[in-house]
Amino acid sequence: MQTGSTLQSGPRNLITDVAGLTVGNSSDAKLNSGTTAILCDPPATAAVQVLGGAPGTRETDLLEPHNTVETVNGLVLSGGSAFGLDAASGAQAYLREQGKGFEVGPHRIPIVPAAILFDLINGGDKDWGRYPPYRELGYQAAAAASRDFAIGTAGAGVGALTATFKGGLGSASSLVAGEHMIGALVAANPMGSVTIGDTRHFWAAPFEIGDEFGGLGMPAPFPQDASELRIKFREMARGVSNTTIAVIATDAVLSKAEAKRLAIAAHAGFARAIWPSHTPFDGDLVFALATGASGRKPSPEAFLDLCAAAASTMSRAIARGVHAATPDPRDLMPAWTSRQD
Image 1: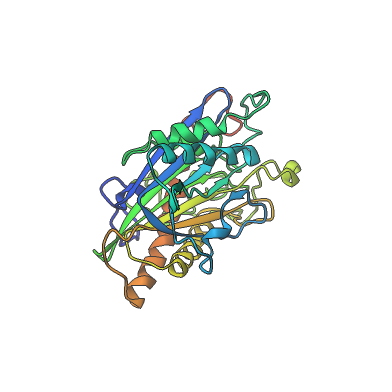
Image 2: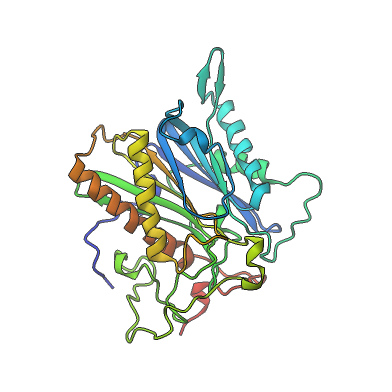
């Protein structure tokens, strides 16, 4: 079912339709958690915007426009709550072996900011002993990076949950005005719901391209209880058992300040795909990457279009992550595909 979108997706409908990016996933089935690495070759201009109340991050201060380092070698999204920040060390180790990094005298220091989501309460065995396994998962994810990668129950989305369905890793891309490619990658693990009321219809439906997440469109009639809050593990909300973490990327030439504006715009995609979003107990975060591979800097009017596409593409990626999730006997929430009504 084709809805109201006027955008065209890229050939893969993945963030790797943006030239210069590769993505790798790794996971541990027993742990029921995983990691996703995004590698930039050459290094990409980067920024970040955090709007959730409970973020978990590494090296995000350096991404502010007034700080010195302009580009990054990669980004990491990981499960594992604060333990998952170790995944960036693994990805950094892989990049160092490849000779990548910020040059300081004779040394190369790979710049790999990271963000984590909380997936400790998801049925997996978290009794890992003295050290958590995320450093090795980060290395494996970086080593597996390619233009093609799995979404759904993969990488950082393996242990993700929403209020009503299993969460997942999602990605989408859009060609904007035939000029710039924009792509989104997201690990959707929100406190809220990505579907409307008790239905299987996605809040992101107005932005769907083709049948990329089921083609159901909007429900008719619209549920009277659609605005009622559906909260994951409400009794444990103070445990911060949530967070949606994402990357928005483009092949446009952008400054760090413009990349930050793109990240801010992409957060509107959270708000159009998740109800509620940006809560005190979500660590909602968007990284932005500008690879500059197109060689073109957008005009002010074209940048407006790019920011709008950042929001719609992010919404689609969130829905695609949940739509692609696969069932597991340990699931605390049903996979979207396992409910047929």
